[in-house]
Image (cartoon, one colour):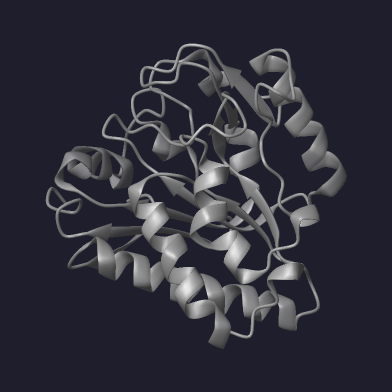
Length: 241
């Protein structure tokens, strides 16, 4: 099996557990004297996690002005497009907890780069300048097809080995243009946390945690943490394992 499965009754319980664990991990890293670096994801379960973070942060001891925030992928659309993962995260928790805007590194929008490839190159450069070389915690969603970030089954981006971020021109789900971190970058993580809920994700979870499998068919299999890989799933998503 790839990683450890942490199973909960429903999506709400998943969100509460992930938010609690994340705040504990951020507090621990800050107690070591470091600024934690985290990677965020989008989607329904991530939004629930973010709202739990906002609810619990006041009593956590975490100094959000000393947390460095990145994204695993983003839609290459206008900056104010409601589909942007960054906008959803700001609305759900980043603004509320007092994150330092200088430490919140959004992926480029169409206002920032002429093409999706230029946007990917710019984000890679930002990570070289402001990153620490690894994530303390990287959170990722998983699609029903097994995709992770915006690395989709059968796509050429799965085999990119010399870039931090890649431009995706033909996403099978809209919008078609996206920026995604590469496997090489995603795997520079101390801990990787997959957040998955819903029966429609059950087969992807089954394939993701199986003993064997091809990352070209199930890209989520291609990401793991150096210290831990955790699959936070509800009963519906875990129904086939």
